Length: 161
View 1 (cartoon, rainbow, N blue to C red):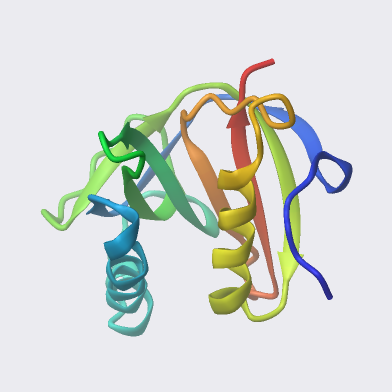
View 2: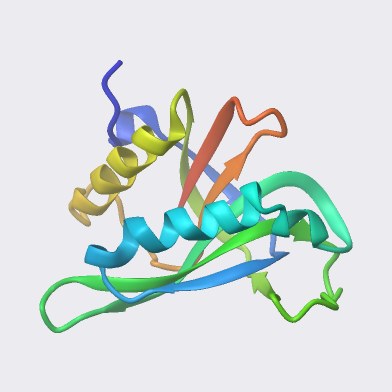
C-alpha cells in the first residue's frame, strides 16, 4: 500500500472546541523529533503514565500537535501532547499533565491502519510537503486520534476554509 497525503484521499470536517489533557513535550526541531516523540509514547503507553489521566471524556488516545514555530533555517518546532479528551474545565491533579483547550476548527482528515510507527512519519512528511494551494493549513491544533483497539488512526490537519 502506498501512503501519502493528497486532497483526493482526505475528507473535510468541522469540530467544536474540546479539551485534551496529557503529557506535553517540546519538539525544538525536526532533527530531534523522532527521538523525542518515541520517548514520549514510551512513557505514556509502555510505562502507563496515560492511564493516570482523570476526567476522561473520550477513551480514544489523542496526540495533539500545536504551537508551531518556524525557525530561521527553514526548519520548524512544535509542542506535542499525548492524552485523552477530558471534560471541559476539568484540571489534572498530577503535575506531569497539562490541560489544553482546542478551539473549534476546520480539518482535513484521513484514516490509516497498519504499522503506525512506520506509516505516521511518511504521512506527516507528505502533509508537510504539500503546497499551500493544495492544503491551506492553519497550523492550529493538528491531531492523531487512535481507535480504542489501536487498529486505526485518524490524522486531522487544521485548515483555513
